[in-house]
Length: 342
Image 1 (cartoon, one colour):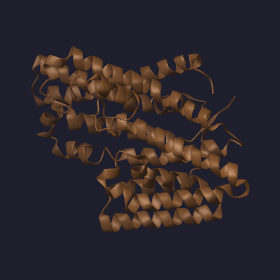
Image 2 (image 1 turned 120 degrees about the vertical axis):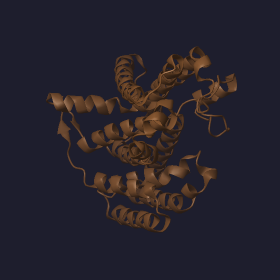
Image 3 (image 1 turned 180 degrees about the horizontal axis):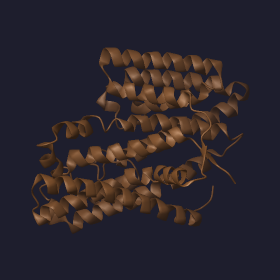
């Protein structure tokens, strides 16, 4: 069977995941502080701007969610959510367990690193497994934990909306869904996303996820296209009056996705590399934090110094995170055959 992939989305996932890894490298690792002395502009770029792809991820996630639902004439709500959980949670659980393990193993060498959470209590650990750590105010064990929770919540809320719309308003489902998403996205942009009170809840991120949803629906319905234009204008206003870099990334991603057409077919070595890197982007995103802890421990254990050594360690850490992300995704692909089918 020949499958077509969307090249743009694959590239966004690849570039975005690596930028976030580099952002966390310069944010947390002690090596980055030494490199900053000679390459301040490079470190500043990764520190301030390499975190922005998270907003692009949310737009893409919304777009793909609408695409998935649109391709099904009917679906079981719980089974669809369960399938999403089986895609996200196994790698997330592996990463959380590994973070705790390396924190225990390398404890003496990272005890002075304030960005590393101490060995968690049972409640803290269980809250991460249940994805409620931010809601109940527990310190995050991993840099990517919050995203997994938010992604699942947004996905479940969106599918519930599609399900209810199809159940009650079969003839007007797109207009019904588009209206709800438009209003929620608008309120999120100007109210919810501006208040720290909401940042642990999915409504905080609906300005990005909702625009991704509308970007897909706009290609199928005139009313949704109008909603799409209005949301783009709202993001332009936010960029101008609030100087929001987040809105700039969200807007550019949504506009680009709207014009995306047929993708590419996996036929040659380059397309296979892109496919593999894209498939591994989630594993890279959730697993890179424990790799940073390991290399920080090595740096402190060996009492390494010097610009060249620090720069080399940063590059090696980045390369190892990539290899581990690829290996974990390969492992997940193998184990997926053993998981329940939905």
